[in-house]
Length: 133
Image (cartoon, rainbow, N blue to C red; front, side, top):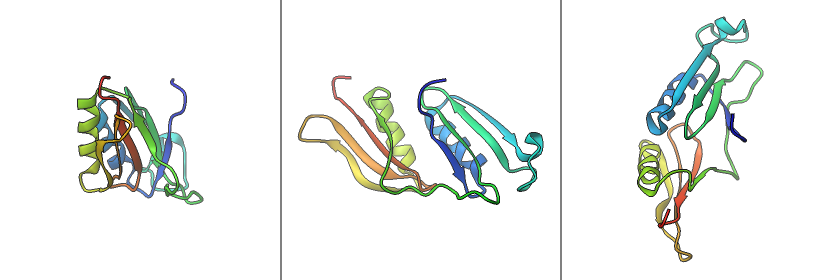
């Protein structure tokens, strides 16, 4: 395992969201439903745990009856320099599809490129790169 891995609780669409992120970032996705995990605080086919492993790692589940679904304010998931410029630009475009661009991916006065967006699941992303990387 790497260091910090965001763990997102979704409002009943964790499988859809995690499959979407696998389509954006690639990697291996494992999903375990409530029934397999022995959970009874939601539908048996709800996601009890999902893990995307690869260049970008995310984990998530469907929020249980006593859990709040993710709400992001005052933060972004940052992918600064996580991959080459072409890949990061592609990720920005894929995450922006059916989402909302807050600040376009663009060159900044200090020479780096970055941009911010909210994806279709309400997750806020900061994506950028140094042009020589």
